[in-house]
Image (tube, rainbow over the protein chains, first blue to last red):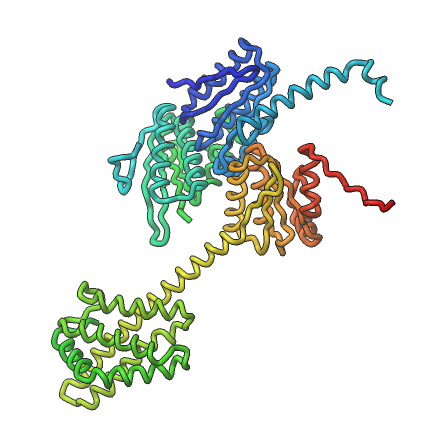
Length: 136
Length: 139
Length: 286
């Protein structure tokens, strides 16, 4: 069985799916990714599906599951590069990919993760009681 | 991938494993390209085939698929027949409802696949198993 | 319906022997039907072409329109009907150019008399009918392909996707949206998002006279598909009647952003992307 490689770039794990995955490969990717998030302590996952010419309900469910798992492990998942034909088909199929963040390309995906992390840090600072009194 | 294959003839493929589902997708895509479906229509029919092939494997306990080019005089199309000798579908209306599943999936396989093709026929019984015929026409 | 060798021979003799007379009479009959929309010289040339094509084919023996040997004849008929279709002539104005030959032949056969006159006239008449039908068919085919071409051009023309700002594209929709056009618009918009890497799209429907359930569904699907790809759509230019239709039809626009005008939509997007739009201070004379 083929395996999808997972690359670590800085604080982000990049998964670029380049092959027509069998269901087993998809499940394996799900497991591999969870392990790598814990091992590396990364806070962002980018799944690049530019090369996928179809996304069916099984792969759609895998993407949702990965997003949920990484959320639990404190990592943000962004799916990038979905082709227009794939998006139109998913809408027709009735799959909404709830809870998954998406971006047009890897670059935008990285920005999205960076922004999400920044929001989280801001939020933690806002919790500081001294900051409250500073505002008039 | 398809060199040396005569697409005028029906193409058969057994569905016994995960890898066979991938092969079904590739087979359907090559035929869809041959009848010049638009990119979106190719994607739709391949996605439908993927859903139905997985159903054949998971619920029908495996089976076979046949892909053929059809021509109604005005347009060409891809016709795909999925057949298994599994337990059949007891309540067809329920099985065609969005979100209904007995297999732990999203329940979009059958209902979703029906929306992605132009024609959808299903025959099912406990004795003979399930036979699904779908057709997608070029525009 | 084909002519046998004997009949063909007589037809060839008839047409060849009175070439000048035949084309002159033929042209005369057709001229009357076309009401001067084609110059006499051009018409004469066309009739001469047809005359020679028929005479040549008849001279070769059996006349059978579907046979290989009639290739030249078919080409002449096709050219005639294609030209007429392009110039906007009606189907009867086109086919009458062929059927006129019947009158010409009737006069000739009558004058010649002979024992085979009636038999020949019926055979020739059937052949002319066949030629006329063939012309009619190719006329219709030409018109159909003209219409198909125009429909395609119309689709191309009517669905521009324009870049409004860095990262913002817009489709100004004008005219009635049917299912086919909505689909083309949808695909083109989504492809442009990918090509330009734009995370925002504005669908402006100011120029759309009416929205039915199907069209609204197409717009909604486009918005959802764009969202799946990581882009946001804003719908602008919803006119009061359309807003009423949307509500009356019970179409749920959900959390999709809608703005009154394209300008409002652009301002909304710019605010989201953090671009400052400043109002210039009015200059004050000191």
